[in-house]
Length: 133
Image 1 (cartoon, helix red, strand yellow):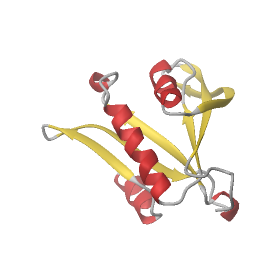
Image 2 (cartoon, rainbow, N blue to C red):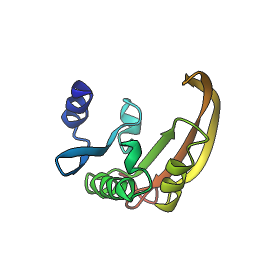
Image 3 (cartoon, one colour):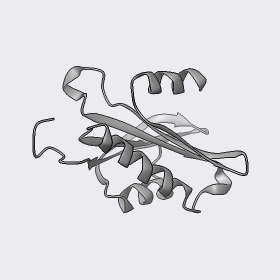
Image 4 (spheres, one colour):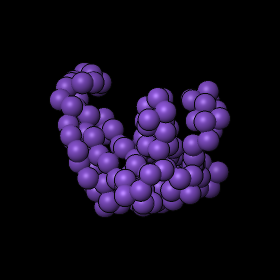
């Protein structure tokens, strides 16, 4: 985890942490969507919360701040790859902040003893694709 965070920061992507009463309750970061230069204006976001903090607004605060940070860095698209089509909280959070579902990859992951889908969601940042980066 420490090395992942250092790699993300070294690539100049935002990494945010929500802390309450000296306890980390969640974090969010953006990372490269793809490493090839053609995709340099697109990021992938990740948001993680302690289970007790789901549905209490922390995820919304983290993702809202992350989107603002990505826009400030000149990024134009952001993609969410949600690791379970049954993760209604994450899908709903992303939808409420302007993401739209663009696809579902069926049964591409196996965790907790079952196959899970990846839900792909996308949102424009700044001018989106209306002008060149």
